[in-house]
Length: 204
Image 1: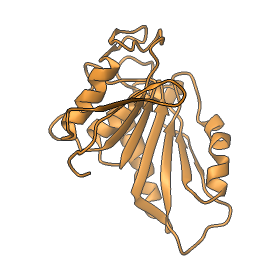
Image 2: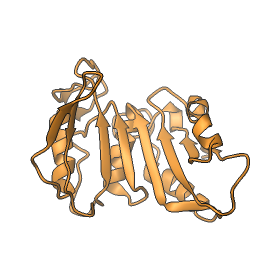
Image 3: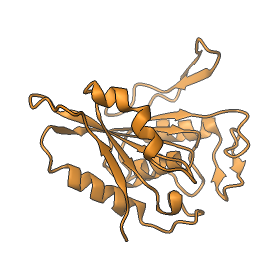
């Protein structure tokens, strides 16, 4: 099977620096193409190299999707192929995703050591996808909405076929896994959102 990935690098490479990698994973039914323009200014400024894989059948296989592809192998192949290039900082490899792609962020954080940090936008952990003792410790950002009708903020069954932890339980699960202080700092952001932050974690 052939699978597609878009790699967007600065037009002019500064040979005296190494560039971090940002992998971004689209949602179910989406494609990687819009993210090229979303991050184009940051790529052009030399802040990062953008890596935008395409899910098989426009989705990522998390157990309930139409795709049955081996996502761990696919992303591993991309990581391995990019590792041979000069001027890439493979110690600064990051990932982010939205919805189904955010579920892949959780999965890759649990089952691989490819990434230094991840951002899961609009998805918490599911009951069948939880960190284990063999999972690496990884910085994780979760962004969720209380009024989301697909990914229930309070947890439970979803129209996607997955059963989700609540937003708070998902964050706490990562904090426990990472050896953080389990007393979070809870603040309200300037735009009125609630921010819960666990700190003083193992491996900083």
